[in-house]
Length: 289
Image (tube, rainbow, N blue to C red):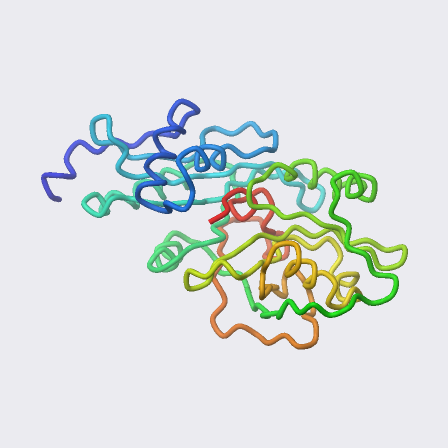
């Protein structure tokens, strides 16, 4: 271990640490988000009894590494389970040997299901060694064309219209996520039927021209809506292509093609099946990369 790595301390990220961690992530991970934006992203808008906001590494008073986490309580097959979403992870190069300490600290927390929805590079192989399982993320690339909507199809975007349309679990999800920084909300109406959609803006190869579907309440209704949802993402959010994972959105529309190398997503749990892992209450809704 190099002399520069001596005295690196690990601790949970408390409310008082969020500002310093946000400044670190702005400087060293993603400068497109200001430190203030990182600080807002690090504290999710839903109510949850969270033990921390993740873990950090310090050398003296300086933050040299951080691993954000988003916590939630989710109902799975009639039982409440606690979930920890492993989010932004950044460690300075000279302290990289300590990075695994952050992961192990996160995973030592008892009675949580863990999901990692944006592992990159060697994080995938590290997760595999730590007992994570990969999800099937087969993804269609859907061109967002300005085609006319089918008769009887509407896309609702006004908060009052969304609130009036949704009920039950869908309404709870909307209220929990309506202030999430990365979440784009709309409801697709096909005749009397509704589908609640959460999307996000995304980048590929540095280009902010994409949208991803994070949550689709009824894939069958989405399919019946034809191209209207994708037209909406083009005209309202200037996204040229939508990434629609089959496990989220079901059967892709015509004119789409399958992505050759979809992004990995992983989870670790002794009880969850892949079908129970979704992308809500996570950095996909909170962090607008």
